[in-house]
Image (cartoon, rainbow, N blue to C red; front, side, top):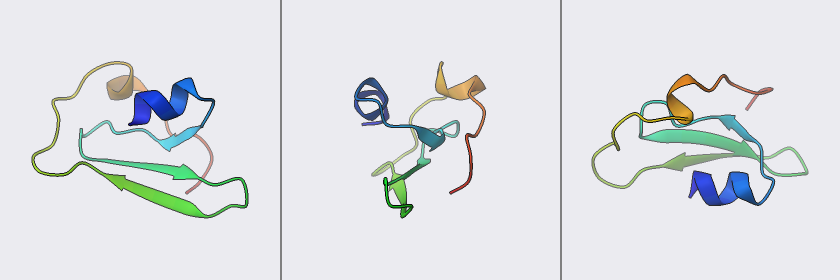
Length: 56
């Protein structure tokens, strides 16, 4: 999901470095937590080395 969101121009404020959780923010400033259902995915690039952006 994060790949699709990023490709659509959505900023991933807190990337899923742990393979389990990410945060995005709506245009009106509402934070949305995205959680991986089941076990965490393995850490991989670009998420593993991506820094946080802004606040969430």
